[in-house]
Amino acid sequence: MPAKPKSKPVRPTAERKAIVAVNEALLLGSLRQHELTESAENLNAKLQEEIAGRQQTARDLAEKARLLDLTHDAIIVCDLKGRMNYWNHGAEQLYGWSSDEALGQTSHALLQTQFPQPMKQITRQLSRTGWWMGELVHTKRNGRRITVLARQTLDQNNPGEPASVLHNFTDITKRKQAEEALLMAEAKLADRALHLEEIVAVRTAQLTTAHAQLLTEADERKRLEAEVATAIEKERERLGQELHDGLAQELTGITMMLHVLGRTLEKPAPAQAAEADRLCGLLQHAHQNGRDLAKSFYPVELEQHGLMAALEGIAHRTQQQFSVSCTATAGSNARARLKDITSVQLFRIAQEAVQNAAKHAHAQNISIRLSKKKGEWLLVVKDDGKGLPEDATESGGMGLRIMQYRARIIQGKLSICNDVNGGVLVTCSSPAATSP
Image (cartoon, rainbow, N blue to C red; front, side, top):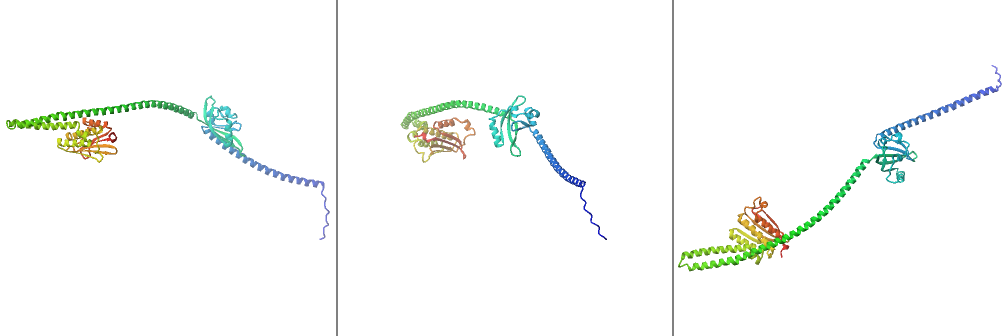
């Protein structure tokens, strides 16, 4: 097949060139429009995301604001110049201004704040630490002044720069009033206590004076009692001596004369001689009773030989008079001669105790013991009689009261009680220092 002849190249015309240029422009425009659409879609997505975030933030803020409105405290947010941009329901309730009335105003100007210290110091602490707490005085819308506990917290934005200040105010007016009332009450109590102390001081001085007077009177009473006791003992001694030297001697003389008369009448008048002998025996018995009575008034042994010898005399006479067993013993340190007023009173106490045991308790065995222990004399009288009746310590017979009186004279302690083994136990202790 024969080859076709080569065609000659066709030169582009101006029209063809224009069409190509238009096509290229349309292509470029389409590409650009696609890029713009994609960018717009991306921007729109970002805007939607940001709007959603801001809506969520707004919802969160609204929820927080709602929660803040539930609190009874006043919550206020101010910018750094003190203008309020948040005023919760608690603030409305506490101060009386609505949110619309309060927002935009300066908090301290609206509330007429009284500070406990210069505001510059509070601002410096807030800037340095981020918080401040203290008591402020505010004025409410009705003009009433209240005390609040203020807590201020510095809020910062994302870069960390101060943005606003959160104020939390709690009304503590009633608590402050209660504290002031308590302080006044404490002051009154302090004044009352001071007054009572003055009264007590005066009364104490009076009581001290009265006590000193009582001590003086007690000492004087003791002195007088001692003098009375001494006088009584001297009178007893005088009576004893008169009995011994007077009546006893006279009885001795009469007895001797009757004895002589009896011997003279033996032959001429035997009956009269026998009567004289009988009378002589009666006089001898009366003479012995007189001697015993004289010794009971004031024993010669006490004056001549000391207390222990006098106690032995009590034991001997008791055995003879009542036909009972009565012994007197002494400790190793009790043989020293005790002859002052202490010895006299101890002797009388022992004498009374032994007489009670023999006469009233019907004792068969009586013991007297004198000892000296730890700087004091101790007298113990014990018997095996029927003991004391239950009300003896309350009713207290004359003998018991006399023994107690004698113990007080020598600053002694007297105990009278029933012994666990039966009978009565009488103990009397007296300071040995009172004895020479």
